[in-house]
Image (cartoon, rainbow, N blue to C red):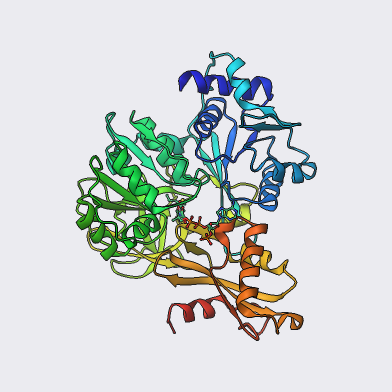
Length: 487
Ligand code: BCO
């Protein structure tokens, strides 16, 4: 890996002419090159921007334009999508293809690393030098760019963080996260490799609980990290045995996990399932560390150097068992590991500052022992099976279909995925006579084709009008409350 990542670094600086601070879009599935590119960027100071391979041309266009990326690395599957938008991205100078075939206008990554020198001197990065950008969805507009410093990687070395998994060199660690999320950077790269343990990777082109089970039986995996929906889907399949031969410890995060699911996993596998909490902005913020008392349903305690409190809308710390926002203290000192700011967006950066805290927008309570209990979002952002989805992203996609006059997209409860995307749609009169089931399928397919398919509305309801304020703003909260049976 040292040899290969040094070669990768040389490919970036020599063949591609990239310099420290340049941005590179990294859109690869779970292939070894994802690791090479990530570490190659860290070695050279090129800022990398991981993205899910579910993205479509428009998603890629937005990212390339807003970040002024100079390079992109992807596979054959997405290369045509990139080519379709590249003329609109004047900053994009280098396209690197990870493939056994060549493509016009693209550099062949695999041949380049073969011929590159294995000698490379790593940059002397400072804690606050930028390292990576993660795109993250909000209530309005397009995803924001949460920029992380090299201190983010450094945080993995902190004694407190080391206690989360207590990985040993003998551990074989499997993090199932898609390579586009911060969870993959932490769980597939920083956590295991900074503790010298082995990373287990599986292509998983399509998620299938049966494959997960077979893999855990077949390979000597000792620790596993996946979103709650993954554990939930496995449990709901009623497999005859979940006694995995080598599995010792499981961790989960990214969405809420019910206490009974956590207990069921423990009963059926004999392995404890610990919860953690985090965001693209924070990495892992709190968790139940190995050896710590588990309180089923709780996402554990704050992991230093983060000082996490429950705050009100003015940033005042709330007493135990009082509902409020999860806040991470940023004053007088912004902790290492928290995002630096939203790139090119001082307004949004200022919006999430609340007194002495970064306001996560997630609601929770804290108990007398310092354990956090997740309640939900305080805004319209949807968390569906661990994906953070901005309603506007789905509404914009729906608006491109001729049947849709207007739509409002909210979160709705779901027994498998925790929450799913639900769209309330007002139809254009010409479509009101269409078969509704057929039209729902068409609209779902349409969303899957214009934006990353994980965002598509799994529930659709046609309505004659949407609830609005007197100024004409759609009242998404009213629709959401109805979905969750709240008043
Ligand atoms: O369910 P459907 O079949 O109708 O649709 C699925 C896919 O089949 C489909 N799809 C995927 N790729 C496609 C495609 N359709 C067309 N073209 C393609 N290229 O789209 C739908 C995708 O939904 P999904 O990804 O939720 O599907 P799936 O396969 O059921 O996966 C289930 C999970 C649980 C594996 C998945 O939802 C998942 O990975 N969730 C976890 C997300 C995660 O890692 N979040 C963590 C973010 S980081 C963070 O929170 C900070 C924590 C420190």
